[in-house]
Image (cartoon, rainbow, N blue to C red; front, side, top):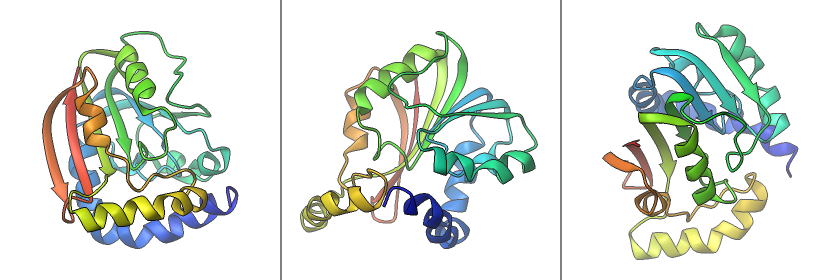
Length: 195
């Protein structure tokens, strides 16, 4: 299934991007300034939305997903470098980045707390950390449904945890949460943080 997911990802996501997610991504990613680190860049769906970045260093551990981002990199108006890396161990020096973007990726990171520590290490003081993530729903029955679906979902969707409580993970980190905007009944959150 690992090889199939990258091939169908854009096909599945394309209608969502055009109808639901475009406005959210446009608003959130336009806040990324200076040198930007993107966590889990996938097929490069965020690349067209960088309007205030000087350059983007984009990490993605799945080589098949990263390979599919080539066209979006070539069409980008800013320099984008991609790396086959996991967020838990970043090769960048301390105080490198002005902004970090992570969209629909923290659900797949094996050690999210370690990834957040690395993000904080490589960011400059006051850096913007911007998230757009799906999370475990607060409504009891919907949350339980996510719990039940997660084992199968993880196998089909490249390790995605439908029920990950990313907001709570962020609250336990050293990041300062500035703004949380719920979308679609709280299934998705856009979250703005700083160090």
